[in-house]
Structure formats: C-alpha cells, structure tokens
Image 1: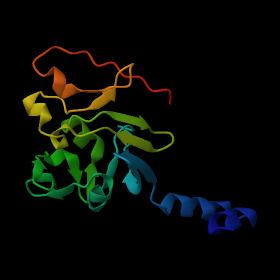
Image 2: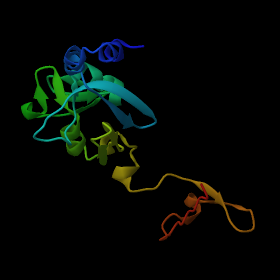
Image 3: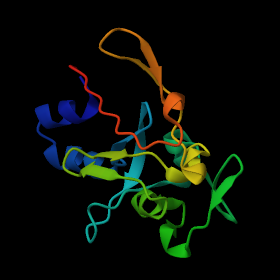
Image 4: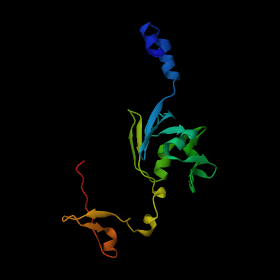
Length: 160
C-alpha cells in the first residue's frame, strides 16, 4: 500500500492531499518510436502547453537547450526567451517552431509530436522521392527509379 492510500485509510485526508499537491505532475511524451514520462509544469492559462525541464528535453527528442538554441547533432533551432522559464522549456512552442504535428490529450497528460522536418533526409531539398520497390499484380518488382522524369501516382494500402 502506498503512503497516500494509507493516510486516506486512517482518516488523515488533509495530509494525503498535501502530499498529492507536493508531488510533481508528470506527462507522457510520444516522439518517434518511444515514449518518455517527464515531470512537467502545467499552465492554467494555456493547458495545451507542455512545459518540461530542460534536462528532460534530450530524453524526449534528443535536443538540448544551448545558448544558440535547441540543438541536436549539427542542427540548432533558435529559440526565443519566451520558450524558457527558469529550468523549464515550452515543448509545444518548440514543436510549432520546428513545424511538427502536435496532438495532445491534456486530460490524460499525453502529448504526441510528429516528425521534425529539419531532421528529415536531403530528399526534401532535392524533391526526389527515396527509391522504393513494390511488386506489381504479376509479382514482378517495380522500382521508383524506373519512372524518373515521369509523373507518377503511387497508391498504397495496408490491411492493418
């Protein structure tokens, strides 16, 4: 039995409520193929905003806050001072600045962040799709490179 439930059971509810208030709220952040549970600071004026500790940013998306901005490997995204408050960092504002799709369930304290475009491969600048191979109806492999220089509509479907 945890301490809070024990205090509630023996009738010291006010003490249990103080313990709850003292505990740091946490949230789950989904990014790429992993989930990170981090301590957060909630903002009643902007409940969709997710303020995490700067030190937790690396465990969420691999970035870290430096004087030149939020950096990961050789990429630094400049951040305004409004995205930081002491030891906390506004992850949702950073996501908007990095052009990420953001989905939040604030009641469940779960935020999901999409791909950061700046981290994608060089095919964005070249506008050339990566080569893929699929089989046609006859079972023969067909590669995208076979259609270079031609307009192509690629339709895919999955049963799952």
